[in-house]
Image 1 (tube, helix red, strand yellow):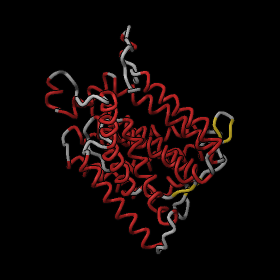
Image 2 (cartoon, rainbow, N blue to C red):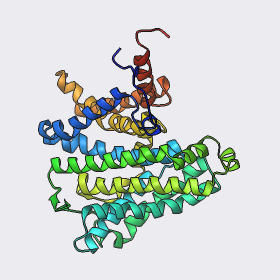
Image 3 (cartoon, helix red, strand yellow):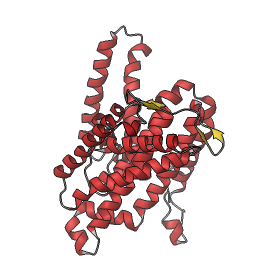
Length: 354
């Protein structure tokens, strides 16, 4: 009854095209920002920042980048972990080899390098699609893994292949404690999510969706497949590269090439599918599902005082987690974002049955 737009009139084109046209949505988003920027920094313990919030924000950013490519443009990719690795190692090399390189500049340059690699491996999408394109992007994953393992220049000639960063700062402010890292990640994710949302609502976003729905018809009406597909690969790889650099710099601090293996690519693809293809909000839902749910399932036996072996608890967590993935995909193949939209539509009609 409270979720109504009766009396909310749009008197300009700008008001009609805003991201949240309903007043209640704008209030809810404002309260969410107050919670994230004001309440959580003062109330959350350090464990929550390290184990849940920072990984959730960074993986949400990576899922947004992958969703642009898979959900909006319809180009299947299994090499997202490779583009994260390129962003992380490129940002590391910029910060190590250039004295005084700012943190933000390192992250953006890492994303730019991931863009170049993504465009190179996106060229085959001009001739192939579907599972064949997925195999091509999977080849990118294996090639990048090999390069960072065998070419010591990328790891600054580290004998073990492990690299690390310390003493981070941005705009003269330290980014070292979990709270500071959380706030930095939150600001970056907010900016990129807003940019991505406006991008997919614009002309380039409509071109991506036209290519996704039917590429032949899109080319007939004047959309250039080369431009549409390669821009999708470029934007997606840039966002994923920035997320990879943030994963190494802000979450891990020290990492090795195995950190961004093919399992990371599959995790991100599952986030996009579970959260909802073609939905920016679905990227956050998918990241929350992948990050938070296993921790909750691991902790349930201890919360209820059930004596259970650690190994058995780990296996039960994987089994329940997989079963929930299958359940959600059966109940709503379009992801959690679609369930959220259905709930909002029913609230707008409640209590009327139609």
